[in-house]
Amino acid sequence: MSAAPSVESEGPPPAPLTSVGEQRWDLLVVGAGPAGSAAACRAATLGLRTLLVDRAAFPRAKVCGGCLSPLGLAAVDSLGLGSDVRNLSVALRTLSLTARGQTSHLPLRGGVAISRESLDTMLLHRAAHCGAVVLESTVATLAENDRSHAVALLRRGGEEARVRAARVVVADGLSGSFLPKDGRWAPEITPRSRIGLGARLEDGLARRTLRDGVISMHCARSGYVGMVRLGDGTIDLAAAIDPDALRVAESPADAVNALLREADADVESIEVGTVFRGTGLLTRRRRAEDGAVLVAGDAASYVEPFTGEGMSWALTSGIAAAELVACGGAAGAWARQSGAMLARRQRGCRIVSIALRSPRLVALACRTLAFWPSIAPMVQRAFAGPWGRGPDTSLLSRGAPT
Image 1 (cartoon, rainbow, N blue to C red):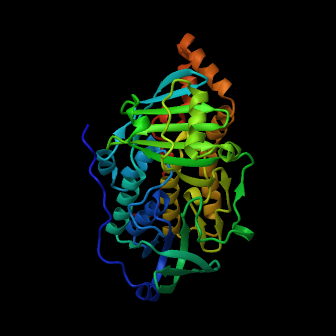
Image 2 (image 1 turned 30 degrees about the horizontal axis):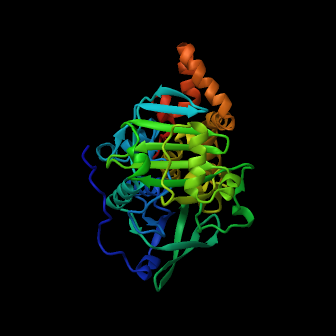
Image 3 (image 1 turned 60 degrees about the horizontal axis):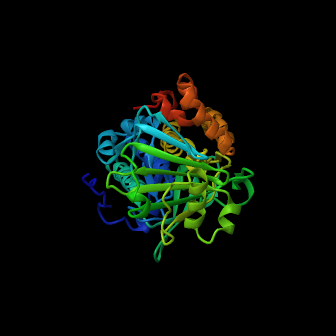
């Protein structure tokens, strides 16, 4: 299999922070992941003077399953990136679900596997192409906020500037630092929330037979591990693990191996020296709007990761937030709209989350499928979620000015 083309960060030298601070911005977007770059791209297309800031330099790695559902593909299509994303990705056809030695294969209707390094860098470039000013390696923190405007403090190397914007979209993820950690912006973390782990495998599990187009999910009592082969032949591994299981393990690799062995005794172990990245506690929610600040993507709420909703939710919420700002949405409008969007996505996710706490139930579903194939559509809807249906494009906003 030929390697997918790489995506490198490119473009003109970054603007001095002093000149950025002297300008008046319609929209400041903090965080250049899927939600932030999608928001910046859409806002700039709609004619808003848009500034996009991220503390990282691109391309950069993220803990993520690396899969876009049909809804996510519909979102990148709406941003004009559909063909580029498909050229750098692997089309997904099957969800392989394993628990207690039982395996079922569920068909997937659409979706692709793509590395976050590639996707995020493409989205960042697209935002710049659409007219947004992009600042990488720049840390932003909220300094002032009321209904008429917000002020952010930007720092990059030895530079510092204050930026004023009519509205701010915060999309800096689970571990973002733009908003204060206490008071009105403190996130509400769900009890029994799990921790995310991610790794890119070139050896070890990459020697297993993991076919192109298959999401391989392994479920155990302490969490689950997902694997998918990317366009360059490597395997993207993402796991959600109970904090207690991670604490007693000698290393993240040991914790993941224990989970894999419980799900499938014949699975090949991950090498102990494999480098993992981690996240904070995953399942959380925070205030979506206050003053001039709107919160989107994972920064607002993290949806159950097993269902592959994360990137699709981020993209659609970023686009919707930008369109609301362009329409001059009234105070409280984003809190209502994002709450309604999230509620639709979380209904199915809660069912999946409960089921995944019981590998016995997952294994029972796998065994039942072997003897009663006619229930496959019901199991598919439960576990494949948005992958088992076509794209629900009603989640993409309508009626914004063009």
